[in-house]
Amino acid sequence: MIVPASRLQQLPPYVFSDIAQRIQVLTAQGHDVIRLDIGSPDGPPPPAVIEALVDSVQQPGKHGYSSYTGTPAFRQAVADYYNRRFGVVLDPATQVLPLIGSKEGLVNLCLGFLNSGDLALIPDVGYPAYERGVRLAGAEIFWLPLRADHGFLPDLDSIPAEVSARARLLLVNYPNNPTGAIADKDFYQRTIDFCRAHDILLVSDNPYFDITFDGCSAGSALQVDGALQTSVEMMSFSKTYNMGGWRLGAAVGSPEALRVLLQMKSNVDTGHFIPIYDAGVAALERTPAEWAEQRNQKYRRRRDIVMAALPSIGLEAQCPQGAIYIWARVLDGDGQTFARIALELAHVSVTPGTGFGPGGTDYVRISLCTPEDKLQIAMERLQRRVLNHD
Ligand SMILES: Cc1ncc(COP(=O)(O)O)c(C=O)c1O
Image (cartoon, rainbow, N blue to C red; front, side, top):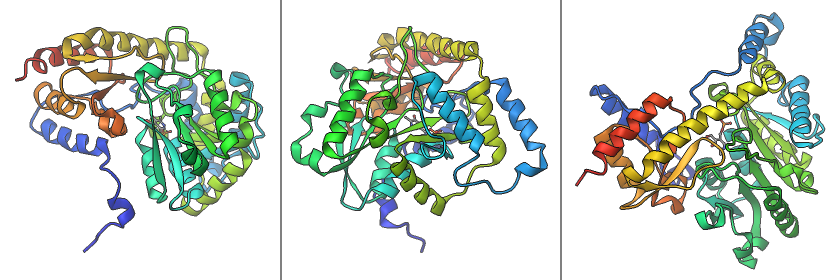
């Protein structure tokens, strides 16, 4: 018998794989399922990224193993980007570490940093890998509720003293998945002050910093004084440059924390394919501002279509200022039931909010990665079939 280790058995099921299985069955039955569950950007990367990959892949010297710390050019390009974009000066040798997507960085950092029985402060609701990383490390979770009436920011003042004293790691994510909220510099300042006061490592998961709407802009936790000593920020190419399948990101910040992450990673994985790093450099250095602006306008138009439809499908939401999701409260019933009915009756898949933490029970997450015409059809199907269900 092949029985998974108890560390795997104690994990909650990964919400997307359950949905994917059910979608497979419906599709095999001939139904056209519109997927609003997963946050995989639907457009191609900027042309310069593809050109750089093709050019690099044709060079014979680019196919061997690469360094655990990536290429110097990639690390330099990330450092230059942080300087240009946020005014944050990073040493590319010690304060930038490439990742094979930010998800592995988050989980590996938990594994490398948390001991069994340690305590981590995790947003409720949040990207599922946070909970999984902490649980795989055998550590305990103290959930920080993200409430709509608090701007979906954690209330650090409400954390009991004995919890802050024990906590070793705090995770934040703005622009936020799933709520679409953004955070200002004042929030990051308070968070860094809190972490420094209690000797906690701050992990700022920031894959959506380039995707904001209505004139809002997002910052970096590293812009705050003192942040570079106490924090790590995870950046990703998946959403910003439509490169989800390329698996490229970087951890930036505290050299000590990056050394821990590197030690963990070098026991688990090896450096990425060099042409991917070269394409990453092109993404950072050769993406026209208009390309990014058009991408944001596209998501904004999709957001407006969904926001306008919500009341007629029994949902309500705060208008997201960033990221690529709408976090919608189910007015009558719970998120799990809504998602099941939406999939079975309207053939529209949305993610039940419980996938993002215990605080998501009454919510569903609607992703904006579907073109406008299909999104309209999805909303019409939900209007016709979901509310009329008895
Ligand atoms: C908040 C958040 N963090 C991290 C990730 C993982 O991104 P990557 O593709 O870089 O692993 C995602 C992906 O959806 C996300 O939403």
